[in-house]
Figure 1 (spheres, rainbow, N blue to C red):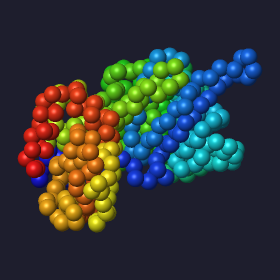
Figure 2 (figure 1 turned 45 degrees about the vertical axis):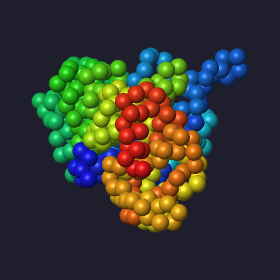
Figure 3 (figure 1 turned 60 degrees about the vertical axis):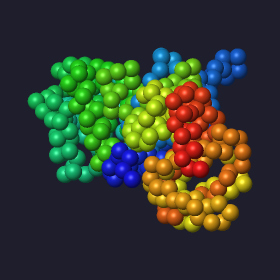
Length: 379
């Protein structure tokens, strides 16, 4: 059953949910942070949770003083983790040793609004200093530095010192320095603020290529609305708390998937976007019970891939495939499950918790009507 995504898009959608948290590039788990001590102590981060996959581009937004840069510098090991767990590229940062910190920083690219170039060195030499510290041999580094500077529109100014460069050109040198060693994680604080539209677009295009081709994770703190379109995830912070965490690409693909299913066609774009953000993904091996007859109904399932058998009293009565849904009757009637659902193949299901499902039902009379039609047709 074709429900609107090709195999590549469906694979991409399913891959946006990490099965193994050890594969996360960044795992922020209930992190708090404060400045000062005693009466001067001020808490600036409150119980933040954020999980970022390899290859994701994450844009963090929020008003000044909301905690964005503090969180970014914690991820980058530029501040010490005080409370909670924070893993970066598999390394726990709470209690990390100085030696481990030094090694981890070699795998991170830093791009900050203050370019911090050495005035006595040319653009090339500023970047060459970074590659020397990282241990990249000259024969590899030199060609890479020149190619990167040319890509950023600085081919004619490779050997200029900072005083001969404009503010935007200095920022592009700083960007090149952060990218040159092709790190596993790039942390960028307002990387396009000093750039015109064309230069800013070139920078984020390079970010996209690194994310796609090298599985580099990129976290950008910005107020620049011009680059929001590159984000896989947009995180908003207010008063030290992550208040929204929207997986843009995932939601777009999942919404496209859902709109090809008759039940979800009746939902408005706004409602569909909200519901997409609340789905989780579950994977089931062949033969495993997804729900059990007589069990308590707590979840609603949509099949993303694979097929399942519907069994009543141990007898198979139906099969469902990609794009079909199940589990709704127990939620609507508040009764035990009336059937067992078993995986016939490896199955991936998009799952909605009971409260979220009921919120959607209540938000759309058309959705409830379509749902009742589906229930009637199955009886």
